[in-house]
Length: 520
Image (cartoon, rainbow, N blue to C red; front, side, top):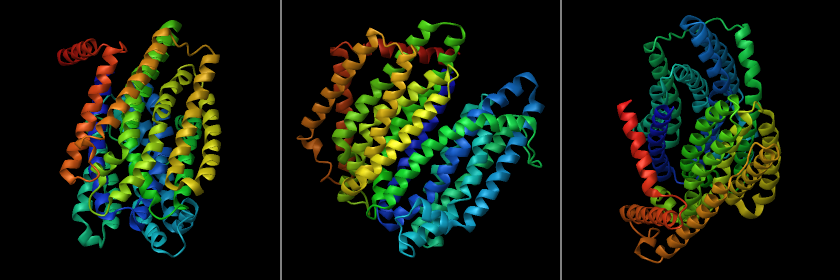
């Protein structure tokens, strides 16, 4: 499990870094104007359906069924089931794609009501969306084949294939503009091309692993019906998340031009710690919790839940504190090139601070949800999510006129805090969450250490390292890098001095793990 986790995490980090390069190019070449807003809407539409149908509910339902068939009935039966699933999925998505292409202007009226009919943003968004929408078909097929590979414990290829999205995206932005006429259309074609490449790579990898998937006549066999039934709850849960995302997008289009882009670049920075820490914590906690509960080891399950909270927050709290203090220099260092001005960096940093407020809560939701799933309760997190969706909508409406681009991120953060609080309360009331004295001491100590680090960063802001906003491109990166390194040093030192964590012991444990991995 540790080897698979490190493999996936490593490829995820590489993908995130390349994604940052791609976003830097978009920021430099398009800035935060109408073209950037139109492109972001065009990309969000298929990406939303991908998360809903591809990586969300489908994989959660498909992988256990596929793995079970592979183990009990052999490769041929599992291969047929995967082919049946792919045929049904792609047939449905093909119909959806064709309808989307035909009725794209109407679809844009729904998800981007703030784009005035006939203006540049509107017409460009329709054109770009028609280019990117087929990505939905390709990437959902890729997500299914990735599930097949994961079910066969081939984690590396499945994780590595997604790196091609950013590689092809970067190449398209750099190479295609002379042929497409502008950067926005080049980036849109890069999205769709990357879907084709990812699907092709994964199909080849599956065939190489002995799993030859082929298209068949779509048919609702008993196994497919079982799969669809299991997807039901997952679709509701994923749907709530995507509706939340859609609400933020709709509100953003009603704000002044450029707001969609300002929030997008802020969210990309926020997603780095959230994507790596939150996903890793939730993914690794669930099987361990389930095993303890199945064996009747209730105290061990409580201990595991507490340690997962501690491990997740020991990195998330300083990340949130650091982003709150140095948001503007970070945005300037990462994106302050070309058409992305210093003023854009300041505005985007305001959105980033609003996202960072909720970062610990977003990660806690990922850590607390397995406490329900491991006990067979998928209903409660969905119900809490539905309440959070309603709260997010109310807060968005309340904030939009006087907070502009800060409103949707702040609404999402506050809703996440309520979500995490309610999940923790319900688990505590059911006796499924029993914080031990060690967790209470650690959380208190972590918050103090994060506060000490934040204070240190504020003081460092008055030194030459705090001049990133006025410095040249290279020195911005040097200054922000210096602030990050010193901030990490202050935090680790505070953890050691206050006795929250023994850094020497932690390093010894990591070294032992690495040695075991090399000898395994």
